[in-house]
Length: 328
Figure: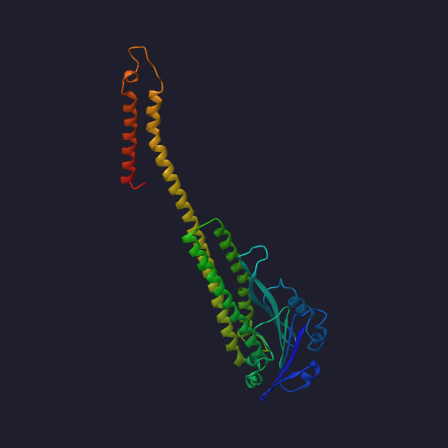
């Protein structure tokens, strides 16, 4: 478990080793925990009176983003996303998520994560540079900054998915093969998984931007509305990309159908040419002779060459007709 204890004051940011000391110090307290588990967060839970159900929500990766109010704080569950290599498929990535719990108090913020948050480094310059703004605006403003960083990652993931869609479309048009359908289905599955994160996250942030949460100051609601607008864009992009993958799948199916039609057309032309030739060969294969009604061609010296020439002329005429009709 990684634990960072920070206190923001108008002058500076102080880092503490002890949670109790940080709580007693003046300023806005931020407790950030990564790779959290039940055995290591008992102290934080007791110090800030965090409900056990909220802790369980963070530790259970199956839970969807949401916002819940408690007596002393507001709990917001968010999800970080990343694209990682799928174990069973060599050339495909899948969307993986990590839960992040925000516990927003009057002058404190606790963030619990079940994994590593690469874009959140409490001791880094990006998070210590504007200590005066955090101290002036409160812990809810700090929560906004972290949530905004998480949502910005959503756009990066969507850019990667868009590149995968464009690559799939190029392969469909240049060299379609049956694996294309599987790749497109994998992309659609990733978009569906992403939608299950972004859609409830939008509703969770909406609660913070409407003035319903006492721990969110009225002056900070506009920042959460900005995050909400970003999530609306994310949801719209997800729907757009789902439509694109559906269109790409239709293009693949049409391409395969057109190829099949071309093959069937060629086979039909060949079969049509051989139908009259087979008829002629069948007539002259009956070999009736010795009567007045027998075929006179059977006794002609040039009967066989004449029959072959006639069959060749029939084939040439039919080929010429098919070319004029642009069947070949």
